[in-house]
Length: 190
Image (cartoon, helix red, strand yellow):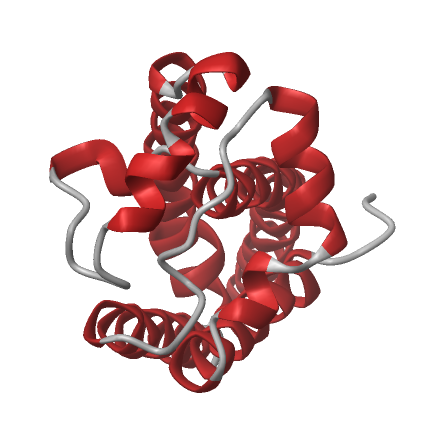
């Protein structure tokens, strides 16, 4: 049995998304200045980003998406246990693990080396404050890397816990149905 239940882990992830949405909407620089983002970025050689220095249309859009994902995921936990534990999160968690694992690897593999990021910082600072990153260039920074890595680790933890609880739920359901079957059989004998 896990120390922390799947419902608690999923609720924490949902509230994490809603909190991130608030900060991306009001002050995205707060996220870029977090110690965890800095440590992961420095350890992996990720370049810093200037795109989160002020709120922008992109950060507002990201805030709305994160808020919607957090709220909708939180609402799924109000469904009956069999639906959210076995059916919904049983397929959602592995899909999110794969997506965020691929995004983490993509960011790490395609990020510029630390020596080239210092030479390109003059070019980056000459750009406008937002909207100038083309394609996947906006994904090659320490904020996105830290987010994708934390999501990958969190969903892996949630999936392992979900699997344990789904097995326990199935055995409880089998035990209940066999008890009900035995009770009905005994009643028919009388």
